[in-house]
Image (tube, rainbow, N blue to C red; front, side, top):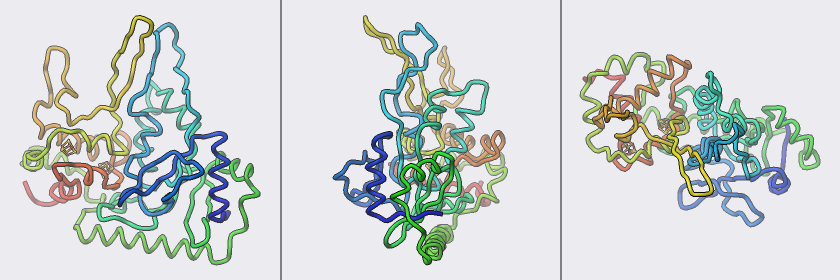
Length: 343
Ligand code: SF4
Ligand code: SF4
């Protein structure tokens, strides 16, 4: 365990700019958004809760070129430095379990994702508060990172307790060792007290909203496959796809070509299974022509397909889809209906 004062932490971020594009969460109104760090960055919030954007945006870009001119098999090189993403929360790190399964665990391994996973640096942080939509603990996630980070920060009054999570993190600490100091005596108990306080806030959220825990999710989709729940819930959906794009575990994409007289490129963009054309095939056949079928499919993928193929629920309880949905479709309420006795 190491310790870094708040002043030295800013120096660390400045030093990291030599090798990385450094992104920090910055607070605007009540939300936190990732912004590129620079010397005049203000309103940086390392603690609090997850940022508005999901972490996946730094690993599979919303739009990127995946092939150019089609003359070689070479992976188009990135023109950017790797990212150092700061203040990442435990719910987003859990998203890696799904993204890694999709992009690294099959016959075809995605070279872009793998490159970004190898090169990007993750400086995660404990949550120091919870918002009403947080329900990570229902999915078995604590509101502080336990894996998938290079270093993790637990914010204290004067600085941060620093835990190393990878060789990359160890090298980082060695390289900037003059910025770190011995851990003060009270730092560990301060961290544990804060972790317990936030965990209680999330558990209170779960109790108040009566959200079922993951132990009760087994078989819920099969049991309610023909239920009216899907039609009822889809009534207000406007098919915007926000619930997919904002979700740290959703990963589907679309390929298309763009050409000019001088140049040909294949691009990949994020796709959404809520959009009508998503599963349409040549000839116009569509296995999910109705909106309620697509809503059911979204839940089926998260709570039936992924537990079967990867032994994980593809939801981290981050609550982003609740805030982003213009139709106010609330995943917590859908889960409650699925687990309950309603038909
Ligand atoms: S489904 Fe909703 S709550 Fe679950 S991980 Fe995705 S955005 Fe977060
Ligand atoms: S965010 Fe809401 S309205 Fe938009 S597609 Fe998803 S469920 Fe439908």
